Length: 247
View 1 (cartoon, one colour):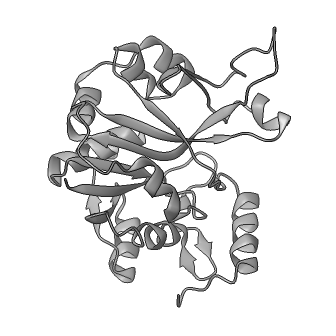
View 2 (cartoon, rainbow, N blue to C red):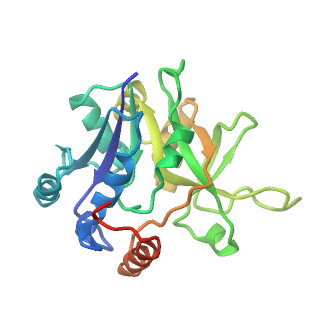
View 3 (cartoon, rainbow, N blue to C red):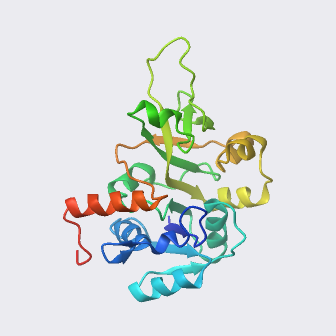
């Protein structure tokens, strides 16, 4: 079973243009993500998927393998699908390039020991939210599952609604997701679904069409860099951890 980690890295960003190349302690942000992913012994390769020559140049400079993709993709999943047409594997692990505090230990939670029986296998790591403000933040995509931990719904609204009880924990999806090659082909060949368009979450394309999406709770939390303020926070945390580019 061959598994490739793919780090989507788009240059254009409405809030932080050039975000993958943002400097953190002397290295571009995607370098920190790539270096942590390379620590995973069961991955066959770690590839950065980009649509911009400036990011490609940074990959060449720091010895990071990359794959050029179309600038027309409007989701990371679409970019990973294109990688799957160029680099053959059984499973593709999506690792978002704007989360430089990822912990490689989280990969062990989502990567199966054996080839999944479901040819359309999809899985995502979730984090339990600890602060009420995070629950009402629309940028956090909340998830509810059935008893088998298969996703029923992903929403930017606080779900479930606490009318009868508060005896549950709110979970949000993270940037670590896993797709089989067939699942990515299905994603590409299937039009956007209604709830996907409404919530702007591409995993709903699988749920609405009857495919299982497995949700796995992870204790490893990170920080998504969306603003210069986030970048400053990440740099401070890495400094406090004693992280250096020479590790």
